[in-house]
Image (cartoon, rainbow, N blue to C red; front, side, top):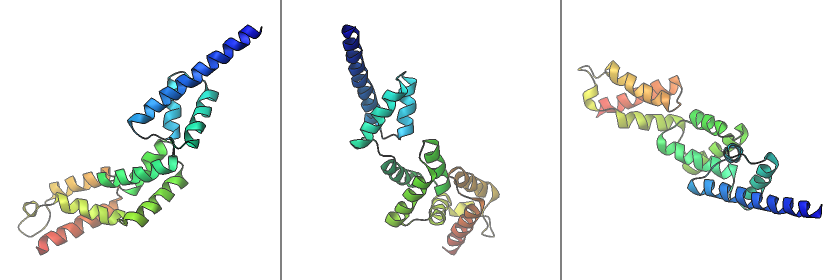
Length: 175
């Protein structure tokens, strides 16, 4: 009987070592959220109790940090030109709670200060060229639609989109 118990302890230790290796390897490629790692380990067939223990250990030693992930993700999203709404939606999909995402956004604003409205105008400015205006200085519809689609895909609201386009066109006609 004790021989069977020893074997199960050895097997458990082997599984714990294996799950830690699998989890560490997964995190070595790029940062992940706790939920992303949990789903991955579940797909690999590890037991839920072992997964939860491993995730907690990784959190305790700093390998997993959902708050840090959310803050870094806002920087990443801003580089791509994404609006807050899209970034929060993506974070929620990755298992970050709404409150944590909102807090990360507030910290991002304190550090970098660029609002969605400013970011949308900057994107519109980069996309618009003088030859996209007609003879009366109005933006040709197909170009307006192109800019609007891009901003919409980045998660900006309709009012932000048209405000940004109008401001960028106004600046372009002043030049």
